[in-house]
Image (cartoon, rainbow over all chains, first blue to last red; front, side, top):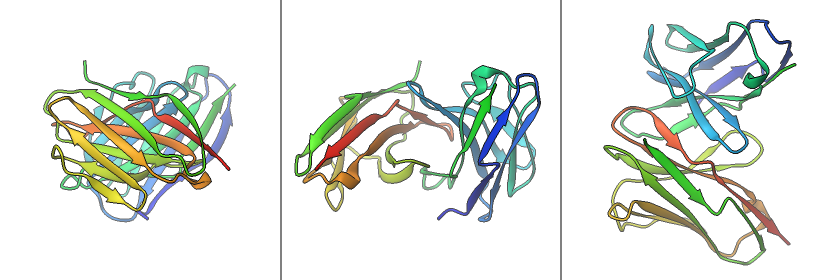
Length: 112
Length: 110
């Protein structure tokens, strides 16, 4: 158990509304990631963070922003949700010396 | 462009069968290859491979990496219904990010 919790776990919203997903970790890991998972695409990296206030884009970052003001929290924001952002979102942490990622339980977002 | 390709996309077997899942990759500055199992929720870590020819084993699961031919296989012997899942392959390169394949869906029937 890597001590990762995501909230909310399920959310239904309407097109054009802002949405924030939260990832909280209890193990003080430096690296945190947000992925989305869609049928036929596997897991795709949205944004990641390598420390407080240090973030970078992944391969599908358009329409998303992130913030990391504390080591334990990594927030993913959809400023104006679209139907194409309906997905399951996973937060993950890693220890660089090990390489493997540990995932949270996922947040299922539906944009109507 | 970096990519990870898994095959087959889907596999249906009966309990007791042996299966082999494939993962090929093209990435710059390869660092490691990882296998994950995903049931209904979050992917769970199975193996990390960094060196060619060294088999990693955990119970009925085993995996090996070929860095010359750029692929890995995941073997599951004497399959059980509990092995039904999506198996994900991912490759780490010189950044701190993983590139995932689309997965192989394994269904094991009694």
